[in-house]
Amino acid sequence: MQKENAKAAILRKLYVMKKIGASHTPVVNIQKSFPKHLRGEVNKVIVPELIKDNLLLMRKHNYGFSVSLNPGKIGEIREILIKNFPNDF
Image: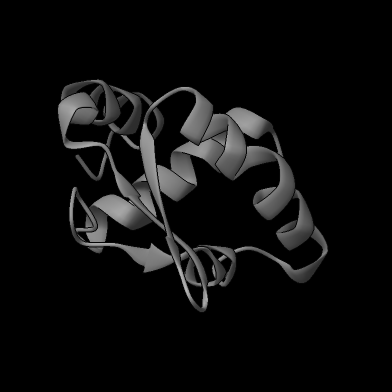
């Protein structure tokens, strides 16, 4: 799986779940939609890149980390989703 496709899939999942701004979901929930052999890559490579690109916001909790879409970048996120999933958005 290409990194860009995986990034778009993560953004799509969070967008559909309406995890924007203060509404967070644990990183473990993001991994569930990927095949087992790719879950490590999602957690160690792709999610940190999305955080670095400022598309995801991260919060630390006593049970681990959770993420949400950055509401300030929602326009850019929608452009990515339209580009990668033209039939859905």
